[in-house]
Image 1 (cartoon, rainbow, N blue to C red):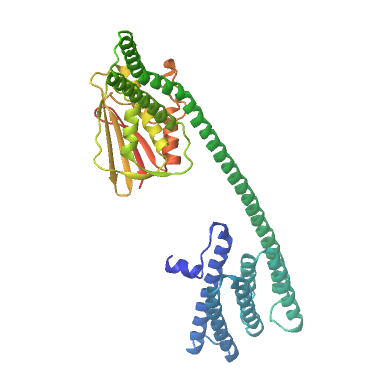
Image 2 (spheres, helix red, strand yellow):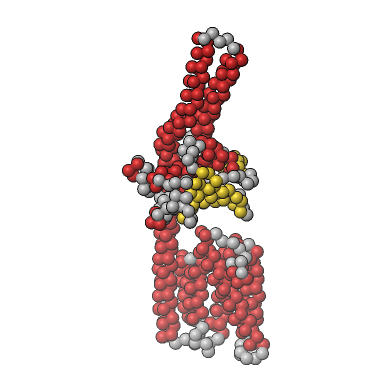
Length: 436
């Protein structure tokens, strides 16, 4: 907070809902400092003989200076002193104005001070207070003019009365308009805030629904992958059983042979069971974040997709263990989405020498994951929209356009990170930035 702002706010903090009160503090402090400077100049001028005033008025100016210093300090002590300080400042200022009105008959412009006082009252205390105090000021001046000769002509007094009444009414209607507009704006702002919150909630619900739908749609692909991974073990088991059957028919009673074959079958079935567990993890909803390494997530993805990646060179080697807090299964889902998209591009473009390079490294407080292929890149016109929902270039093959959109939701909302896609010299590069 700068020195000027500190002075205008009396050293107090105001939130976004206290803009009016902040403005009133600024105006009050400005008026008090200007009144203090004005009183000081008048007092110095009086002492030096530059301004001809009587001794009583000189003391009144000095008293007004002391009061201003006191109330400025008092307002800094506690924000709740505002109303007391305003009334004290206005009351002391009005006393000075009345004193000038009664004692400086040669000053034909002394009534102007009451216009300024009325305006300050409306701004600092509101229109209702301003209306009643304005009527009091007018009545008191008219009453004083009846019992004391103010050396004002009837025309001057009538002109003052007319314009002061107009000024009272103008300020009342003007500030009522401002208050009504402020109330309407507040109501509109509240409605917009509620609408925005509702839209956000609806969007979150929709995104969660899309995520579930996408996972259900992927279930078919996962089952196909499971079947593909089971095909070879099942054929191997079938071959073992046939060999065992032939051995029994031929009367071979070698217990060690049978034991070895049983162990081999058990090993294969354990591998098949583990495959089920690996794929089950993808559809499990994690309730809380856990600590895991990026390297372990990458290794699991490569293991899960090894059949689909069989003709692709994977350039990946963990250089260090990069641990983060998050949802491991969700990040694995992101990796699968990106790699699946790259595999589809490889196949659609008949790329030879397919290669995917995966890098994981830490940079200051961030963990950065880079996944890059050599399939030629993303068309320039699609770069800005590939993360949009339902955007797809694979309509004929049944693409939903939700994959990368789901990946963006997971990274940005669940992992509180960032995902971007650019074209490198060889192909497309997806970069995921996660907080440390």
